[in-house]
Image (cartoon, rainbow, N blue to C red; front, side, top):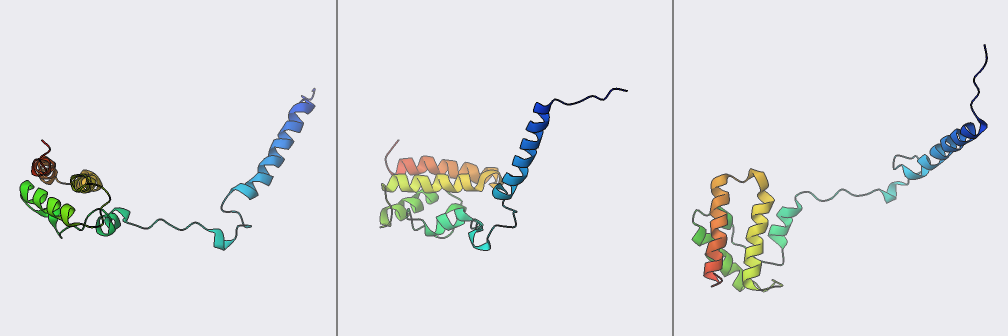
Amino acid sequence: MAQVRKSTHSRKTAKRKAGHRTSSRARRHPTSRNRSKTTSKRAAPKRWSQRVTKESDALDLKHGVFKQTSPRKIAASLKRSAEHSSRRKSGAYRSALSMLTFYINRAGKTLPKTQRTRLERAKVELKRAFGRE
């Protein structure tokens, strides 16, 4: 029986690729034994959005403002907070609206439909309160 021989070109390329793969693996992969422990990546802090709501430069919100039952009361509270805040970087209306939108987006799918509707109506009331209809 005749032996089937691979061409020398394909053998050389296979060896080169195999050698390249093993040598670069040690350099690239983070599970490498050569990696020092001081250069490890730190995990991102959990609940960054909660921290934004509490420590944001935008507004000092009244506790439970988004849990109120009336869209008009929510809008009035946001307006009051925005106007009295000395840390905000933009206009009062823009800060109040962005904080309301941020809360809605942060809650995502977990926000009950009734509360989402209430907060969307609060946006309209906020526009009305600032005279931007």
